[in-house]
Image 1 (cartoon, rainbow, N blue to C red):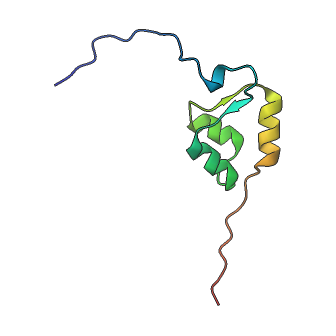
Image 2 (image 1 turned 180 degrees about the vertical axis):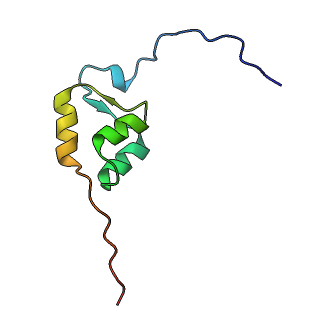
Length: 77
């Protein structure tokens, strides 16, 4: 059996989320939830800890671009 012995802090890996031109870093699953209108931006940020929004303006834009949509079930004829 393997047991955790220690936890040490480290530097984050430089990537797209740390570049100055990046306004948001959203995992594919979270982006799909936003695009389909299943979750709102605050729900995505709370659910996915690796979802990063650079500033409040980016959050407001994403909320306006991807509103929550109620599910519509269409009957088959």
